[in-house]
Image (cartoon, rainbow over all chains, first blue to last red; front, side, top):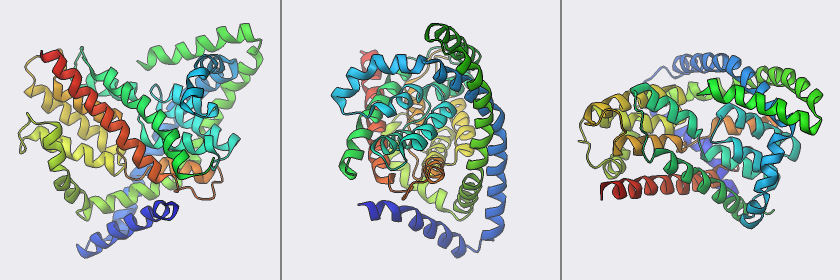
Length: 174
Length: 193
């Protein structure tokens, strides 16, 4: 299973390159063009990230996150969810960049290959920033009543958190 | 929205710090967080460039168009009331494709275009249609094939095998999207009754 997982990316790379070469696409020039856009995106997120990370790092230093996570800890025990990954689950639906920073903290402090590190990774890879998406998408077309969107999306998020712990437990030893 | 959430986070932090006695740590953390933002971007830069470059090749090489075709049975199931050849449907398909391929830059503009097309089909202009709800729910869930940012972060944190979480990620994504979509379908039916 581990090997299949690790092989996915090289195989996808191969398919993408082969298809482009077959179509006579100037592969290297195309790559440079796309990479330049990636650089632009990265530069664009520096300032919002600085703003958010300072706020979130204040939040974490103040002990407020521990307060919330402490309140939620009985629930995580029942679900077999690693308590170290709880701050990520709390922040994930609210802020993409904040949860990215929290993920980095978990990976650095507990190890990327620890149970908590893996669960946190799977949560980050399999969920999105719900509130941000809702605001941008409905804001763009001036919809005031989002009806059942938020509760459906949050249900999906909670499922993701629970299944992440189960899936990691299945694939890796604790 | 961030105009409320951002100050709220800061104010809560300061107030809580008065009770926990960590007010000094809070002011240090504000400056440290700012530096971390820049560091994080530097660490991400190389991998971001690499994958956006590869995705550009995928787009020009026709892989994107092929996936759009592959998705059509799925989009028919999710949005039964939207005609297959409508502009709304093609924007939806391209947005989903961009999401699957992890092209966040392309996904958002295409998603907003789809929302505009959906609004034209929507009779009630102030309230979201069933299709809009479904579409936004799918966009709040992650259906990405390669979580490039995640892999970059794992590599930066010294993981022995940064990509090994990809199968559990796929399983979790599928379960989460399935629940979101099912919930949206159930809630929309309940509203209709």
